[in-house]
Image (tube, rainbow, N blue to C red; front, side, top):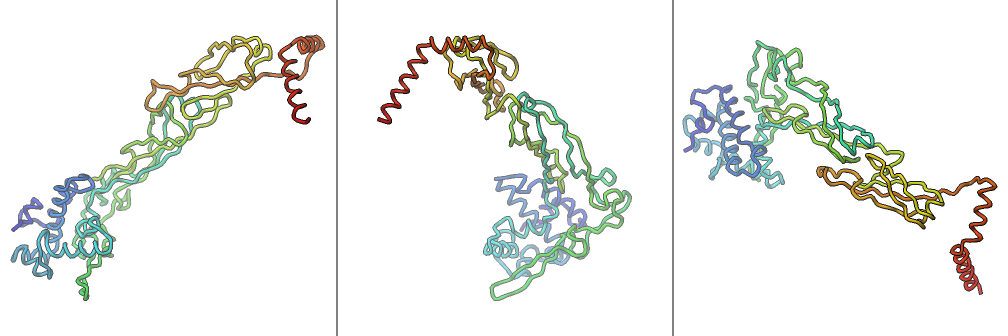
Amino acid sequence: MRNFYEILEVDKNANKEDLKKSYKKLAKKYHPDLNPGDTEAEAKFKEISYAYEVLSDDEKRQIYDVYGEEGLNGNMGAGGSGFGGFSDIFDDIFDIFGGGRSSSRYEYANRKDMPKKGPDSRVDITLDFFEAIFGCEKEISVKVNEECGHCHGEKTEPGTEKHTCEKCHGTGQMTTEQNTPFGRFVRTTVCDECNGSGEKIETPCKKCNGKGKVSRRKKIKVNIPKGVDTGNIISLTGQGSVGENGGPNGDVFVYIRVRSDAVFKREGSDIYLNIPISYPDAVLGAKIKVPTLEKLVDYDIPKGTEGGTVFRLKGEGVPILNREKQRGDLFFKVNIIIPKNVSDEQRKLLEELRDREPEVAENKKSFLDKLKDLFD
């Protein structure tokens, strides 16, 4: 026969406060959420939860002390193996209605004592174009709940006490049972005496009003990595609100938005821009200055370049996120500038060029011949 006192690591004379303290410590150690995939921890959690359920109830504890675990099985009208007929019936009921194991009585009845991760927080920030490309440090302000420094999370005014709720015996919930032709059904509700806390506080903490937590804004410095873009999210683990019952703090998620730039256009890790060149440069070729993200570079435009031609500068784009030694490329398109106002001298030179340029005249003749064939 199992010894519930040994399971909870207390002696037989332990009071309810001792039981509760030991249960909370063991529940945090073996809780399935903190031991994912560990079937032994899950079984241990179920066992200590059942032991606490029995010993924290005066009537059940008296039956157990006199008749042992078998007396509990007989009293609850169920036999079977495992952790006792009562829990098995409860599990079966929840399984029938789709609750699954996570809705078992052990987890539900002791939900208030389970370690719970604190709430997460979201912060939206807007970066300049170059801040996103080369990274930066930003300071954000986020509203979080922290442990009250006056009562240290105990919810009571220092020097005063809190007691286990006599109505729910510290479980925070009230359970009613009903026999039906389909079996015994159990209904669990929040205790109306303690509002589910399982505790009665004589003098609530004046600073937090008995909540055990206070809300405040804190500033956090965030390192923005190179190459972030609109839609990226930076996770700050453990920087959110404080957890419950020893659970971890929540996280802060920083959502990124990046401003556009007047010159450069970004698509992923590549950069695009337009560069104007003169007609003579396009015809004769030229060395032009191309702005990259960090400097001006010389680039030789070949002679006979047509307007709209795109050139590539490899590795002059954006550092790839989390792979900053790798970068995208820079693409620039040349646009030939056609002057709208010309001097008499320029006009005369252009007319001479038009008359003397055989390639242009040949292309014109070819185009006109095609039109003639089209309409004949």
